[in-house]
Image 1 (tube, rainbow, N blue to C red):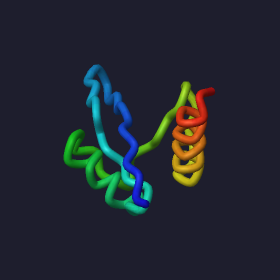
Image 2: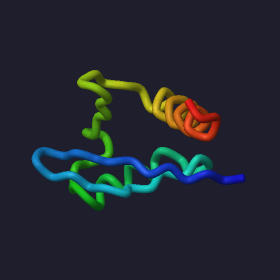
Image 3: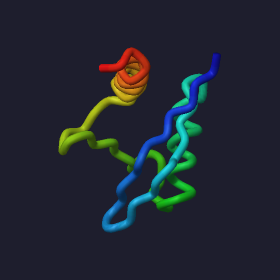
Image 4: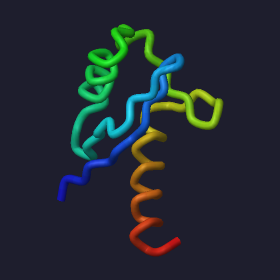
Length: 74
């Protein structure tokens, strides 16, 4: 089953709510979505979480964990 996660993207002073990230989607597609919103080239994009740069692989692991925790009632 392909799950979709909704994330909030902050760029400068702008906040884009409800940006969708699909579990089976490649991150290139997600970064392309970010490019269409911000016009920041994909190779220049950086992902921060709580003030720290994170690797793309960590994003997916974190989203899956949070989704499972939410459905388990944590």
